[in-house]
Length: 515
Picture 1 (cartoon, one colour):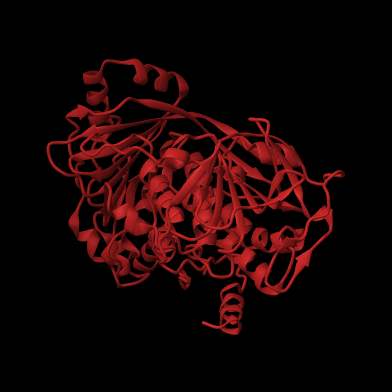
Picture 2 (cartoon, rainbow, N blue to C red):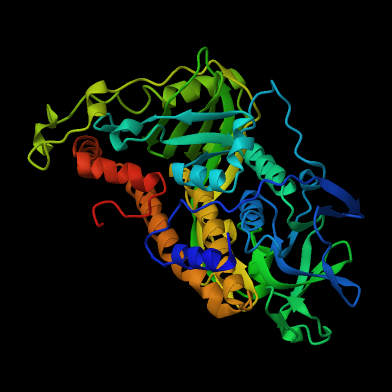
């Protein structure tokens, strides 16, 4: 493919739609396999030219601070595109798994830290040729989801066939996603260096940095020292980069050092997560809204499921330490009979109340309410995490950009947090590719603001929806309960609304009802 075709395709894919993120994009990846060629102290080099040096400090095009799932997805995406795979990329993270590879023991119970990835995320992983590594390990697709209210007044069921899809999502252990992305990066000829260290300080305008011929594209070089940021690491080493990407989580050091302001609040809720076992395989995602917060039962493969149970901090502390058998009883009660009876098919007698809106009623409403499978055993430790909403007022400034939890954290009730982060990684990689194609400085704020303009509205919209759900179920009040039940039944019986909700939750950024 000649350069003119590549540039034309990149520009076409980069048409900005602030409320829409294209999740499928053409994979340019060449499948030339490469192996990790060696290491130098704490720096592991993936095959390719070693980075340039500046006053004995290595210099890179991009420094990704945070080698978690989202940071590694960005590195993998950049390494998979012809216009960006020649960039020198540093990944800064002290996690030893990045240096030695994640150790995944076959036959062991699933780790409690999992992610529910949407069809849009799966498409992204396939396009960068990373999903095949996930499929080699444990994962669980699900094509059905049931959501219901503790009052027994309402429920809704979603099925992949309602929107002509094969599945609604896939539950994958975080360490499987991480190792799959790392394996994909190692199988490219990208110039990637892993620094097993932590970021301690960052100088975005280093006055003492010498002049460097920093190659941006085959036609353009930038010689101004102001085009470099200096990063100091906890092991005493330093490096330079044209662009610093903060992918270092909700307590981002990059965000702090760069001076990005945030807004948000704590929910006064904690999430208890763990792995549980059934007598048979679970193939459905279940979620019940309780007075203190939702409980979700997510399939993770074989006879295992993952529990994500939101409650107040005291309840979380008590349930983390209680006897395992008592905890299992509490889980089964929370998913079945506690707080109220199971919902009937409709509190309004039938779905005819909504039939005037559209006669096209989806098939899955005829299946009726189902009781989740019984949990028979706790199969992992119980972990507790505080919940909060946090959002950076800006995602980008000169030389610095934020992605994933460094830019936004959301309530986990719909499992959308990491999917928003993967959307960030996809969008940013395309914007960087545009900059390279045009011969631009990839650290210029005007270029990075294109990424912010695409991702910020989409992320805010999802955050607002999830926060609204959280607040709506924080009040136990009779009239409000009836309204919530009506909303459940509307979502269950009004086909266009139901399809819109499923599509939006699957990664289509069009908002339900409005587009």
